Each structure stands twice: as structure tokens, then as C-alpha cells.
Length: 515
Image (cartoon, rainbow, N blue to C red; front, side, top):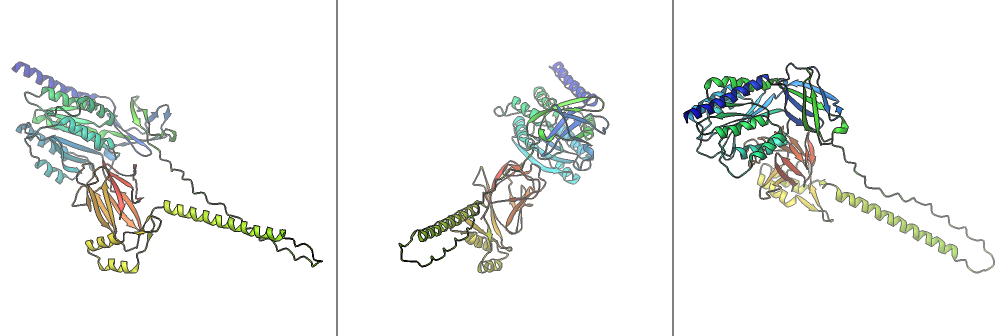
């Protein structure tokens, strides 16, 4: 058994050496891709010196423009998620080496580089959101505690990739660093084949660092396969002297190039197309990439205006006939005149009815109009300023007024506070109701936000804000990780919203209402 163990560990060590050599001597490769609204990005590793230009071919067409930048020159060079197995199966020696490795990682980070640290067992627990603050990261590392728990590695990683990373809301180089002994206790759940298929689709580099023991060779091999699937390295964590080498290899990602590519307009159709990147040294790299979906403004057909009814000049009164000898009275001219008057009146009345119908239809199809509060109500609200309960009571009593046609007309005054409601579209019991007189902040951290959606990790600490100005409501994304969407379309700037709209924060879909 001793000889067999030595052979197995020798094989693992060989894998480690091979992995490092492959990274050091490997050729250029596409590490990650990102699709934006009007362009897409290709992250290329091992490209050597930064070229002035790079040719990119999309299917059979040449890209309109390609901008080349090293990630080290970006405001946020990269984002690293450290996913640590904090179960008791990690030995005390490995815990010390892990702490040292993480210390080296945060000490040698790039300017602006953001790191998030999370632990996992049956599920993920985020210890700190993405930050470049050394003090916060150091405090987090020092506070890591190991627990008696099972680990669901496959399910945890699948859920992570299927959520935050599939959405890919920001154009930044992202990578995952998994530190574990590879043990996966859950027998029922996502299969390894399903996880591998998702890894190919999402294209996120997954580095793995394995904590070895006498029984986990197969588990480590399964974990290291995650790195091979994503084209990056894996490392056994056996010796403290290897930690600096691992950190050095991880830091080679700062040499990655970002190619920002603008495709021809006719190719911006949201389909997946084969993209070929041709570097100056002759290297040719290929990947299937989703094209931007060009958004065209919908041609809204204006409501047809009724053709104006021409006002006909009244017919001239017939000249009175000269008096002659008594004859039979001519009734025809008098009858014709009366008929003309009646016909014209009916036509004018019909036109008026048609115009009124069109105006009423337009009014019903418009978003609710806001009318000023009457003086008495305004005085009550001003007198109750500072009392949320009082304001809410007034709003409840007067938030809507029956317009007589079955619709609700919202009441507005420049000094009015409103009551807005956010309701989880899939869990209506989760509903949030707050007054709004200026700005309301929405996010995951209760201490930072007016509405805390703390039950979903895809929501950023401060995700979005809703404001009101002149009776109109606006939503603005606060540079969240997973973006804010209005009725399925991502918000890129401050956007007007209406009662009944669906707002999406990360994975959460919330119905916005004004009451």
C-alpha cells in the first residue's frame, strides 16, 4: 500500500509540474468572452507583447473595429472569486497554507483588482463582496472558520455559474479559484456532465487547488478536471514552498489582452457565430461567440387622426321670387334647404363624436396622469411631515381618484410623497412598501438600502435606485454586478418607469407599483 500511495502522489506531482509547464510554454488562447450591447470582448492569454492591431473575422466578415488593451490598464483589471471549502476535512496544515496563499494573493493584487472571498459546504456563504480594500480582505482571511459539514461541490459550482456568471453583466475579466479536497457528498443533484456542459457555455476560467490526503486521489482528479475544461491550471497544495509559485502563475493573468470588437451592423442579431482572432505572430484563435443584439426602436403607429370635416359654406338663401299671379306654391326649394341643414348637422355631430372617442381612447392608453393635490390634502401632508405613518395614511386615503371611466388617476404635487410597492413576481408574499419623496435605494445590504432584498445573492449590496421628479418615476442602476433590467431590457442609464413595470435585480423579478 505504501508503494501504491507513493506512485499516486508521484502522478499528482507530475500533473502539477505538467500543468505549470503548460501554462508557461503554452501558446495563445481565448480565456473568456463577453457580449455587450453594441460590441463583444475577447480575452486572450499568452499573446506576448501587446500588438498595435489585431484582425478579427466574424463568420466571413471582417470586424469594423478592434481595440486592444492589457487588462492591467483597465480600471478594474479582473475579478477573482475565491471559493473555499471550509469543512473539517481540510487538515490543519492545509489551513495554514491556504491562509498564506490568500495572503500572497491579496498582497500582490493589481491596482483596482477586486477579490471576493466565499466559503461553501452545502451552499455558498459570501464573506466579502468584490473589493480592492486590503484591510477588508485581510480581516476576512483571518476570520475564516472551519466547520463540521458536508460539501456539495458540483451543485454549488453549477448554481454559481448558472446564476451570476451566466448573466455576465459587466465587461471585466473574471476567474474562479476553488480550494478544496474535492470531496462531493451529494449523490443526487447536478451531474458532472451537466456541470461540464455549463462550463463550456459560460467560459469562465476555474483554477483549482487541491488539498491532498491519503484517500482523495479520485476526488482531486475530478476537481482538477474543472480546470482542464476551462483551459487553465490546477495545483496540489502539498508544500509551503509551492505557494509563491502558485501565486506567480495566477498573476500571469494580468498579461491577458482584452479585444473590444465592433461587428458589422448586419451581424448584430443575437445569434452565435464563429469568431477567428488572428494575432501578428501568425497565431489564429477561434471561438463561438454570441453577437450583440442590436435594439431598434419600435415604430409605433400614431393613432390615426380623424380627417377634418370640411365646413361647407351655408347655401345662399334663394332670392324671393318676384310676386306674380297666384300659382301653385313651390315646396321643393324649401324642402331641399331643410334637408341640407339636417344632413350637415348630422355630419358635424358624427365628426365631434369621432374626435371625442379618439381623445378618450388616447387618454385611456396613456400612463396615469398626475394631478395636483387639493389644498386641504396638501396642508395635511405638510403638517404631518416627518411622520411616515401619517404620510402613509394620507397616501392610502388619497393615492388614487376614480376618474369616472374606470381608470385610476394618480394625484401629484411637487411636495408629495408617494408610496411605492415592490413585489417578488415569483413569491408574492415577499412585498416591500416604502414612501418615496425623493430617492429610494434598493440592494442586498439593509444598512445601505431603503429596501433590502437580502434573500438572493445575485443582488448587489447597493443595486439600484428609484427616484421621482415632477410626478415621473425613474430607475438607475448603481453599477451592480448583475445589472438592472426593465421589462427584460437592461437599463444603461436613468430610465423612466411606470406602475406595473417589471424590474429585475440580478435574478429577482419585482413588480413595481405606485399607490
